Image (cartoon, rainbow, N blue to C red):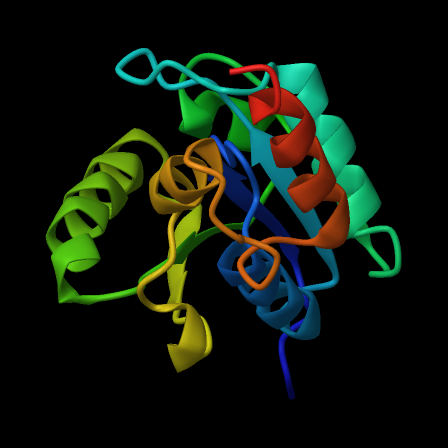
Length: 164
């Protein structure tokens, strides 16, 4: 008998969300009953967009996907996941360089909350080189990032950098 689909959390800073992130969200939606895109801050990064701006952009970019909600959180991911009664943490792996860090985090998370499983999803190969840092760098210098991000994010990037 197949197991019931579960609640998955896809955490990240999403500063900004890219088409690679959206690809992972779409894959997660096909696997799990509900997906929460959980937006957080990373103390080691200086974000371009506020948490509320990122939440709004993701909500707009995922508005046509059923069973996706977008929330923000702070603190330990596993505390947030337990509070939301999540069964699964979704993480994207673009390249082998992502694996070591993500593997370490998954093991720490398993130690903190062993009943919550981490699932790694790979985006379409056309997004394996893509990350938010590259998108911001290209956009900052007036490069065309329209194929890297949803239209609403592209517009927000243009607005953010037009006065620099």
